[in-house]
Image (cartoon, rainbow, N blue to C red):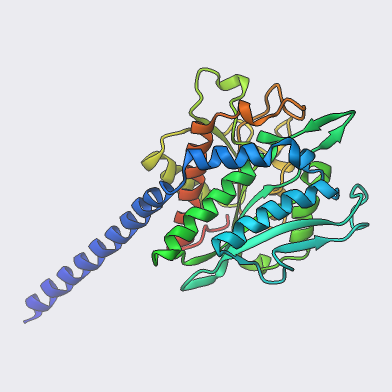
Length: 333
């Protein structure tokens, strides 16, 4: 009798372990399969619009920032993705005078997908919507900086909404945060961190995308790469998850050369993830490095590598989806 009980217990334990392994595998495979909703032709069409002269460089606090925020807002409205709580029609207003370099009112645009059984835990995907505007008669359209990140997040959101409409919903809540004023001093992300729409203490990760549409000089002979910054500074587990997703499904060459607080370029401090990291939230900053058109009027949509931008967007989608659906949030070190 005791022998039978032991055998039954061992069989039950093996079955449970097998089910857990299947669940883990399904989450990983599911993340990759759902990333295929992201389409290169749609990314290209959207970025040609967003980085066109019509938007006049999207300077924060200007009338042309409003054209950009309206474009982003209407995209989420048309998809049926909800405005984040506490916004006014998807806008988080930053009043004129809040920051010295804002010449007028400015707005973040914030949408979200509520989670299911872990809805109180939040993942924030961020990209800055602004660029440098018009100076000396030249329009700085910022196709890579950060049109690429903006359009990437919008297409990630669309893929997640398609999954949700099919009944495949994220366990954790996902926030799509389009911040303004990055070029003037990380204003939009600073304002969000000071006035969070969902509690910062419940925010488990920030994945920030700033310039992922080009190839820098270091990788002319190795275009299938991406710089990752900050991924293990607060959580080694976050880097592990990121690496596992990439190694299993994408096999991109992750370059960590800038992944240090004392890097002379100080990239860790120069984009919107930093306002989350300084509040103890694990981050990954996705970045293609600078190039000859960085902060010039020649940063235009025709110079974007669209197949590469699409692959990078799919990778970030799969990483976010995996983080949203795994059992445990990344442990802090």
